[in-house]
Length: 401
Ligand SMILES: Cc1cc2nc3c(=O)[nH]c(=O)nc-3n(C[C@H](O)[C@H](O)[C@H](O)COP(=O)(O)O)c2cc1C
Image (tube, rainbow, N blue to C red; front, side):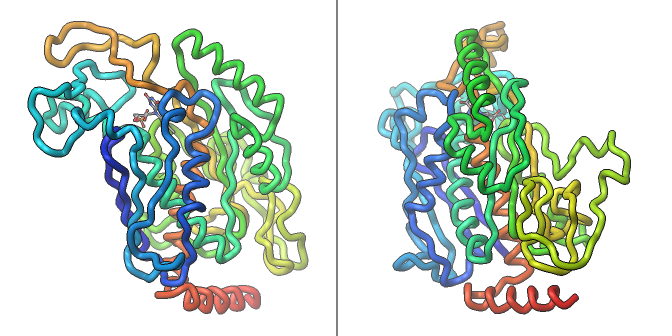
């Protein structure tokens, strides 16, 4: 079983994660992880913290000379700002120091309910963990998962499709090209004109003390048919991926394939008809690209987003997600002090104005983690060599199906 846990507070000493279930013989280096951590910190509209910190992962166990051992892998990411927060966040008891207590819950955050639920009189005890800082740890795990998937020809791509109502007219292209275009955009958006309009919107929102949300797509290409299962609700791949996406802070909607459009589209245009014979490899259309075998069963459309009956069907897995606007506003919203019960403007923590580009990178990570888990469930072995043997045998079996 592939699983992981993260720990760490936003201004604590470090984020930590332990990954269990990785096979022996997988190549892992910190620079690959750091590259994704850097991508998570980028994007137009981020706040001050991204300027003072540059995340870097240390691999502290489970890897020797660049290869996994089969034992749990532990990663840590230090919070570089930690020294400035030592008084407020020291795990050791402290008296007579500024604990940077927070008494004014921010609407849209875990602040108020978290304090009630855990009985905290200082909301900092909630916000330090509920913060999206935690996603740095998930991006690190995602980088490892991507490395595993890459061994088997599976790639994960993403791009931003909308910010604050400004939609990018993303023309069908192969996923790699769209992703490469997105990587060169400050909004991680493959359409240049839309990038410009999105940055302008962000400038306006910032000037008004407001914030913006948006949406993004994650696409996984090269996924074999048969990951996940139709037999139990909690093994359905679409359910697992949806949960992972929804668990990202501020994500409020997730779609697979046509998503909500299925409600208004006739069945004849929703289902993907089945063909048999020779066909092209990845296709020229990101939405209707095919399982990259040269012949066999294939589809000409991909309304299902690569998942039917809770299982990957061989077509690219297409996930869309909607992110709400960042809840901390520089023009603070109204709230109530938890001690005095008096009306106040909510606290302002250092904050982003728009973090949709970063969310798309986190989306890639959590999709990679779920796919790696499903892949290991199906083909798992103790070493990469053993998994490769299992995988080859399966591909041979389905090729002659
Ligand atoms: C990459 C990323 C960065 C974020 N940055 C901020 C931020 O700077 N300020 C803020 O108030 N919320 C930020 N959020 C959103 C909050 O973490 C989130 O809205 C909050 O934890 C409440 O969770 P919920 O929106 O899922 O209910 C960010 C989210 C993500 C994914």
